[in-house]
Length: 131
Picture 1: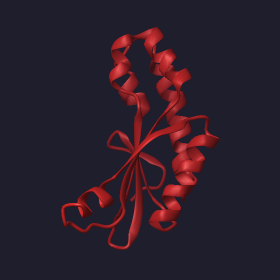
Picture 2: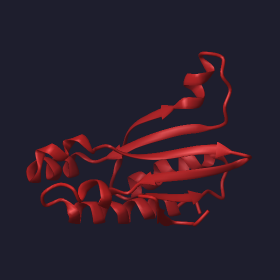
Picture 3: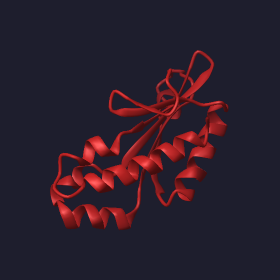
């Protein structure tokens, strides 16, 4: 897997940490990069409720209210995009991270290409915190 490279519209990397360490380091890095974790979805816990066991599997939904105001001020239709997502999962004893490509998502809307590029820089910094 390519490290820290945008692949198929997403940023994909292999973490050098355990699943739990990866999630915690990513949460800290989100804050350090000026964003906020708005929600997390823990598929491992959710599936265990119906008797299915899987490895670590979590989505962090991230954004910032100031950026949301920027989105709404330039093209209200782009409100469908936030929050951005970072997906962390275990597979064959390794932990992987996939972050959405904000440039691609926001490029379709008026005046938001620069925001997408800024967010991609933040996302690359965030995911590199675990490489």
